[in-house]
Length: 510
Ligand code: AHR
Image 1 (cartoon, rainbow, N blue to C red):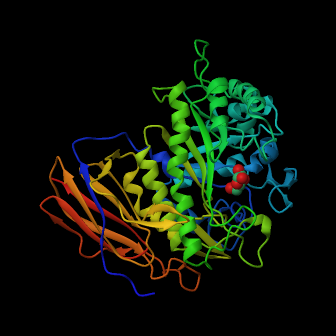
Image 2 (cartoon, helix red, strand yellow):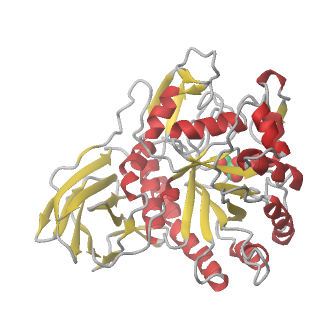
Image 3 (tube, rainbow, N blue to C red):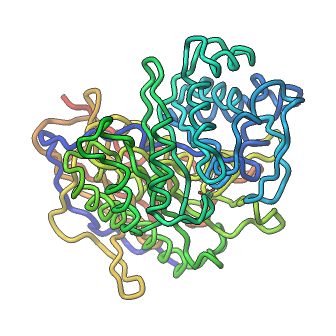
C-alpha cells in the first residue's frame, strides 16, 4: 500500500517547569520463568558448555541485557513459582532433586538453576532481584526460611545453610512476590481465600537486618477490579494494627494479543485488521491502570502502596514446530510498538504504578533476546527498551494535547495513532514518540515551554512492514538509526515519524 503523505498527528504542549512524579526505574523490569528455553538455554548453559559463560550463565545474554540497565528481574515464575520448592534448588547440583514442570511442557526440571544461580545472574546484570514465593503449594515455613536464607547475616539456621552452600554474605532482596495468579494456576482461589493465605505468608516474610522487602500481593487479571478491592480491604492496609502495611505493592497482569486466548494470532503473519486489533488491545492498558489505581486511591489516597503490572506484553500462537508449552514466539516491529505504548502509559501513571515486568526476557513470549544454539539476536522490543533507558528514575513531564490526536477507527472505536511521553533527568529532556499508523507517516509538534532546550538528537526504530523482525541470519532488519529532520522551531519540537515507528528525541536543557 503506498504511504500517505505526512500529516499533523499530534500537536501538544509539554511544560518543562511543571514536573510530574518520578518514573520508577522498576517500570522497566524483566521476568524470567522456568518455562521453555528462558532459563535453560536462555540464561543458563552450565559451566561445561561450549557457549561462553560465567559460572554457567551465558556471557552474550548478560552483555546484551546490560545495555538495558535492567532494574529488576522477577523469578522463578509465573505459574512455576507456585510449584517450586526452593530448597530443591540449593546445594550441590548433582544432589538436587528433580520435579515435573506441570505448567510448561510437562518437562522434568533438574533444579540446576536455583537461588544461588539466580542471585549470581542478578549480580552479573547489576539488577535487583524480585523473588516470587510459592503460596499455591508451598508452606508459610518455606517462605519464612527462604527470606532468612537470602537476607540474614548472623548464624541463624538458614544463614548457616547458605554458608555451607558457598555464600557467606546475605544478599539484598528488593521485591518479594506473595503468590502468582492465585485466581488461576496459583491455586484457583477466591480473592478472600487468597487474602488470608497472603497475610500469613507476608507476615513471615520478615525484614532481616537492614534488608527491606517490597512485598507484592499477587493481583488481578486484566480489569478484575473487585480482586484489587478485596486485596486493598483485607491485605494491603491493616488500619491501626502494626505493622500497618503488610504489603508494599499489589499487582495485576495484562497481556496483548489480536484474537482470543484460544487463537491469539501469529507473531509475524498478520494483516491490517489484526494489527489494529492488537493496538486497540495494547492501548487498553491505560484503562486498566487507571481502574486499579482508582480502587487503590479509595483505600490509600497517599499512594503508599504501589500498583505493579508484573506480567505484561504480547502473547502470540507459538512458532510452528515448537513445543506449545514453551511459549516461543518471534518478535516483530509490531511488538516494539506495543511496548512503546505501554511505556507511555507507565510514565503517565507513575505516581501509583511503580513496578512492571515484561514477560519474558529470553525465548519466551515478548522477549528481549532470542537464542538459537550459540547464536543470539536482539529483538525489536529489545531496541525499544534500550532507547527508553533514559526515562528510568527521570521526572515525568506530562504531554497535554492542544487538539485531538489523529485516530483510526477499529471496530467502531477510535484508536489514537500517535502516542507520546516525556521526562527530564540530568539536565536533559527525553521525548518518546510513537506512530502506530502502518500506512502513513506522521508529523508531531511539541511545544516545550517553561525552560529552554537545544540540540535535539533523534533515534528511530521503524520498518516498512510492521511484521518485520530479526533472525539469526538477518539480525539487524529492525534496528535503531538516527531520525533525520528533527528540529526546534522557536521552542517547538517538530519531528516527522515514518509509518509504524518508535522514536526518541533527546534535548539538552540550557
Ligand atoms: O508468562 C507466562 C505465564 O503467564 C505465567 O507463568 C503466568 O503467571 C501467566 O499466566
